[in-house]
Length: 280
Ligand SMILES: Nc1ncnc2c1ncn2[C@@H]1O[C@H](COP(=O)(O)OP(=O)(O)OP(=O)(O)O)[C@@H](O)[C@H]1O
Ligand SMILES: [Mg+2]
Image 1: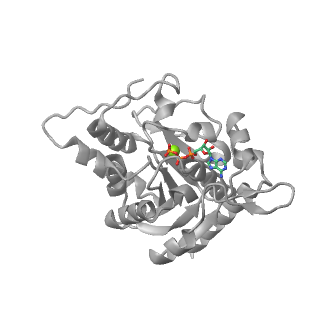
Image 2: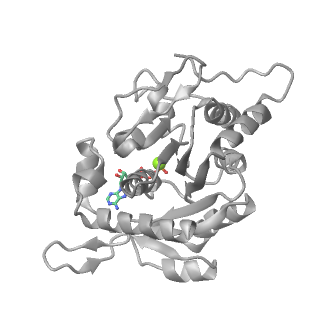
């Protein structure tokens, strides 16, 4: 199936796609871009599990996996083997993930998930616009966007694509909590017109299963003071949990597999806080 074409015909195709996509995304009441200043801090994990937690609370949720090179939400949601289809009008139908979460991910258009995407930068930005424009998004309460790592071209394209009053959730880990890295993500959010929802500190500590003590594994935490400096708040602190990777290894959604897990409990708390902030 050939989904992404990026040929120009003498007019600005990119802005055409941008307009069309923006109009469709307006049909979601709340849009949250999950960003970070650095890769590998748990954006995809937080985006996927937050989507499930919001869906558990009766919200209609769509998850847009915008990490073209490193799409990992299909695996985290246990729908790796499913593929996108087109409807009669040629629109891309989101994949149905657990709890009715609508998932859109480039990986679900490839013949096999391990097929590498070998596009150069400018093509990726335009590809993501075309993808967003050609999806049959319908409408819903929350659109969660799992962003690619960093604050480069594609991230800027996505942020600018969002309708007004979209939000940014910054995910970071203690070893990525340097002021410069968090500042980069925060500045990215504000300079692209996103409203900063808050910070999620992931892999904050490891809780000893025997004595319950919290051990700082990835470095010393300074999220609270950074948050104060940037006039925002830490919405959640998630521990490192072996259960997360056990769920990933068995290709099952962590939140549903370890319902009573510590991380699951905190993710649900995060969903409640977000609902309280945005829907009040
Ligand atoms: N709290 C946690 N406890 C244990 N493992 C975790 C936790 N959060 C995330 N992980 C694991 O860490 C790895 C990186 O997470 P993830 O892919 O979500 O990061 P990312 O920020 O999306 O990375 P990238 O920048 O490459 O997109 C994954 O294997 C994930 O399962
Ligand atoms: Mg990711």
